[in-house]
Image 1 (cartoon, rainbow, N blue to C red):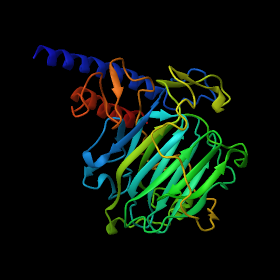
Image 2 (image 1 turned 135 degrees about the horizontal axis):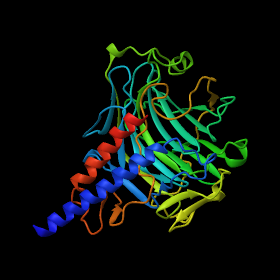
Image 3 (image 1 turned 135 degrees about the vertical axis):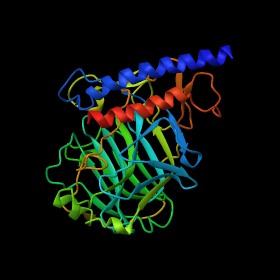
Length: 364
């Protein structure tokens, strides 16, 4: 009993410390390292994790924008009315890496299922599926939030994406980005072809569903999403069975050494940039089939993540290394050192993550 109480007290103490730093971090949530040298560090994943959402939620991903359900289909993201944009956002960042999401997309005109990698400097890599068309995925990238021209997006084939679970992959290195659909490489972007807009700073991982066709959005967004959305035809649900995230760098936290926004300026606390490249727990990218020709997207495609144009906020993270005495497991759970992987993470920690999300909503 004494041991349990000690652990409880330690968990509460750690939770209070995290909440305190999270509130502080939310104050800096808009801190762009391109314009400030005082931005907080980014929590590094520094390893590979394999998250099975069919087993329930994990505390390395924080929900916001609506209720995320869990069941035999994994994590479910349902849009049933205006303003709903349920999503999960990682509390960690990766500095180059590979993200594999096994998911079934949401149907519905104007409904968008999204997978987004985004940095504090507004570097961004996207995959987005429109509920009005179950045959394709839209791949896109942005460098430092610059959207002039909107000429980087493409339509790529992703047949039956609402009818079956398919694994989608973004593999991102200093040299190229590869987007894959079910083992088929559908697009490759080389750094020299990005016209100076190549994403190259630490990224969070987020995914969820939202209504681009909602009447509150800009006309261009509604048109891009092939809306408007008719909520009477819903609810509309996206499901994610599993996520495998491999960080190609190692360490506890990533910081910006200067304000250039180049990957050479990124420093790792206790690790090495690209220190895990080629050994991050995932099979190498291989081309298993040829993809048809692609077409450019219309100029109205939006940037900026999930739920753009509505009141949904991205949850705050601690923006710091994991507290002393806590570690990330290969299943994506943050637990005290020495805990078995089958032991549920301390309630205090889970409560704090919930409070962090609530705080983020109030401060947005």
